[in-house]
Length: 462
Ligand code: ASP
Image 1 (cartoon, rainbow, N blue to C red):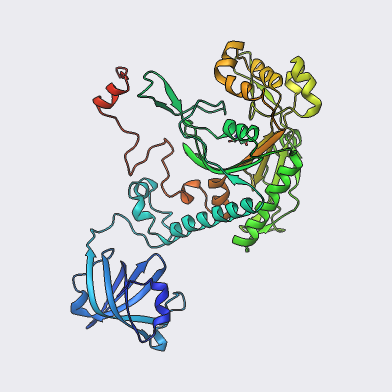
Image 2 (cartoon, helix red, strand yellow; image 1 turned 90 degrees about the vertical axis):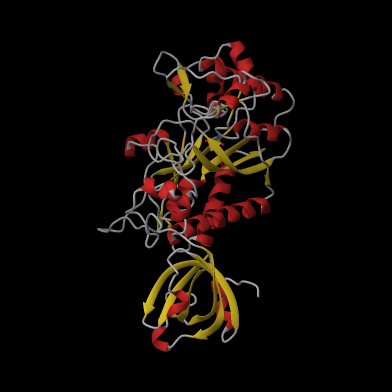
């Protein structure tokens, strides 16, 4: 007999079926024992004579065969998909025994230490709340994919082993064995590749991209995150804004119909207005109902625009505020080229904020190589360094560049907000700790002497 899912057993009233899963709980009622069997689709109540189940313990994996019957009326459980039926066990096979699990998976688990939960994440993921989060995450990503594909976007993978990009964070580096002494960088974002794909003529690119940034523990961050990364040619800021608003509004309508978007089109606010009025460039614009608390189903999106392009570094120089590949707003191009009034140059950067958290950002790019070179000079690169680090971009810019721009939206944060979670760790299957450790795999870890030798790497004495 072929195993079926618990949720399918409803269709087999008075018939014999085979199901399998984990023992969620056992209740013994004298001569009869009840087992709640859990599989990916939910719970099914099993019934058997006490002696058949006397060895069975919670979290054992079992397979059972038996007849599906209607439950007596007073035993119906309206909370379960299979609440009106039960399976009377004819045969029970133990597929795997289990030790007592290190923490309970009943309930939401917020009260259990995260260290514990992360160390045995595969057990934590048995929890219904996390199953739902991870499944909903996939639904959202699938929705985004279809939406963009229908709009003519092509999903293109870009390399994980690449060259350092200046995105404002530290790179994770990977030593090369074949080119000993040289290093790849893991991508902080596919920024340069997606621009090169525009030069290649793809016009509408997207990717559900992993981005890696070696950041110090700060707030609710992860060393790797997933973003919806996209780029388009022959467009302006309005096109990107319109696309993202349409995408987010339809995503919420389809998958989170209980949520209400406070205002559409999403309001826009300049960086300087935001700082003046809210003292932050991520304002939370939710208007709570009079006298009430913040409505958990209220979504207040807004765009923040007109950021300064540059800011002073700790030393005497300048650095970029967002993205060195952004174009200045057109009226500041002249100042940029002349390196005049650097402080007042505004960038074409636009950020999208949801309930006080940044959930995306992008810009119209600087597609003229002279102007891009000037940006790098302002932030202190010598001509030779520009060539070494960005020569490939300047070279590509010689061969016909369409005007282009794009955006990236941090999906972990977006989903955490939509799913009502406080931290992005709750929507990531295998998150890391604040100091970037994977407690389950015990990573990072030392590597063997042989590996080091092959890489021609000598470690500094501690
Ligand atoms: N590369 C930027 C980021 O990862 C997004 C963009 O400008 O498209 O934040």
